[in-house]
Length: 551
Image 1 (cartoon, rainbow, N blue to C red):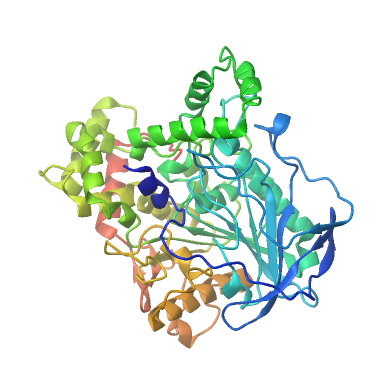
Image 2 (image 1 turned 90 degrees about the vertical axis):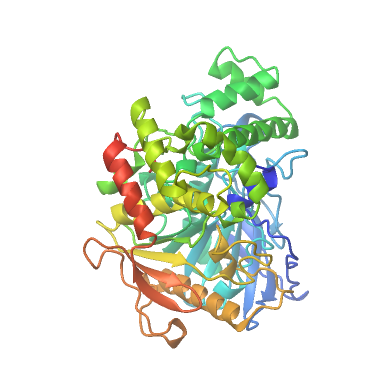
């Protein structure tokens, strides 16, 4: 598959269109406030909707630049500065992509947008961007929080290291990895230390994210390092159980990168010392190229440069941890879209070419985590082939491929996370089915694709003419998400905007999964993709060898 198709699929905003420019603030109103490390100057502006006044503080460093000897190490808390820091515009995104790479290693910055610098403290929503742990940023043009601010929310976003810099690992103590994840934890600690200065309540922080950011939220709920850093979470199309969220080949990849750059690979120590001396753009170009090659080799094996197993940070068997209640017991919203892989379906010729390999060897259809027994792998693959594709060749069945990828990489894992966590906490399950212009201006496939719900939370594409249904859906999404941040309930009371629906936890009806279907109308339903999900239950029961690190 083409690189652009892969990047699109894993949660990067790659729909072609006009991004908004950062709004201009009043030349007379650049407030200066004192935070833990020094003074910062922000800017005053107004939201695009009802013209709510807000204050933006962008590009505040929350860690020392992870350059030089700090490369491939945990983040270090930012030291204090003298004078007033100019925080009126976004800083560089983390280095990413290739040919040529974009961004900088000096990228650990946080942004705070607040409608309230004085008075009562407001709930805080901290956003973790997606992009397959390889791409993305926290900039205003990607995630303008205007509509959230209009609901009396303090909004926080931040960059974290990506690709080899954030998630490269030798899988030992020399370079244990998960540095981007540790950046996220440090950023959330920064929020606890500083958000009150921006009018936010540190006791009312909700973390939320999309795609890889959503999987990050899931992992943040599974480490004691974050116990007191937030009180709730929202996961949009990704959890720790997704096959792609865990990197199973990091050590192999790191040594391959070293060899390609003529670095001494006789040991982990010599490798990492050598890689610290390589020019950042050169290292990124080689490392990103290798990650794409590996992804193209087998999309269903997941991403390169994701989280890795590390004691005390990422525990070994995530599904076992969740099912036995070994996670932070905080309420969550979890969901997916009606056709997660719709973007892939928009390129039928590419899909046909790619999936010819599975006609030649169907064993690749079996989830990588299911079993290591070769006989079971083939038996499971035969059942999977029959269920999704019948007796016809796989490669020509684009619609069936979209359903299979949606289930294999997203739906199955998200549903299992809902089932496991709902034994212990309130889980509000959703399926986003609405297909509007804000989600995909140039839609080529039926169904809402990966990441479309996110477009109804943030300021995107203001020059498009949107329909009343688009506006209504955006208002509903913003209301549900901000209600949850405020009250830990998405529908604390009857609301005509939400068609007087009360969204209850997923397990209120035994042996069923209750969910909110978000379409032109909002409706409570049971058991999304029921036939397909029951099929996978049977596959894991019949052929699986637990415990599972993903599902």
